[in-house]
Image (cartoon, rainbow, N blue to C red; front, side):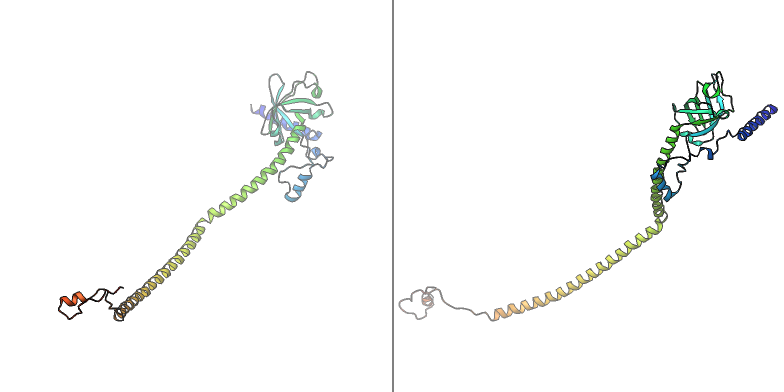
Length: 276
């Protein structure tokens, strides 16, 4: 069993070495699209200010990626591919990908339909391999494939734009979190400051209250003294008024009958009653 695993390992190493020597592995410089049109004005302007914070480089052709067949179904139409790019996560079921065998890049491309995509793996359905591999042929495990998908490049571009929005949201949330952290971490100090401020206001109000009560008490004492003086003055005025009152002794009733009853000398005829 050990010899079997050792033989498999040596075979894979030899295969990778041969593929690298023959130039079948896609390199970064080979997928750079040097003739790309400058239609990323807004993105380029953003890059000038913020740099490549979305990790998207417009000079790279993201439609191309390579992978290795790791498994297949008994019918040899469904293949599981281990890829070298994590961007395959943007592929969705039913997406179409075109591929060549690494040793036959000059031949026509085969067509495959994506069934599933996961981290560093995709599963494709390819019924006809005649264009890229030959008639009545099947892909063996370990075969290196070179893929091309314009839809993947478009999704990566859209994802980079959306990531700018996410970065802006993250900056906003980070700023809000920073303000919240400042408040939480400085809560004790802020609590002391607020309490001190209100204690100061309370002491100021207490001082004003004491001043108002003292002023009211002083005013009361003054009013009590003034009350005594006014009462004394009124009593004195009442006595003076009684002393200086002029009595008007004017008879409104004839005293003839009174004098006659008392036996005082009176005239025979009474004086007519004086009208008021």
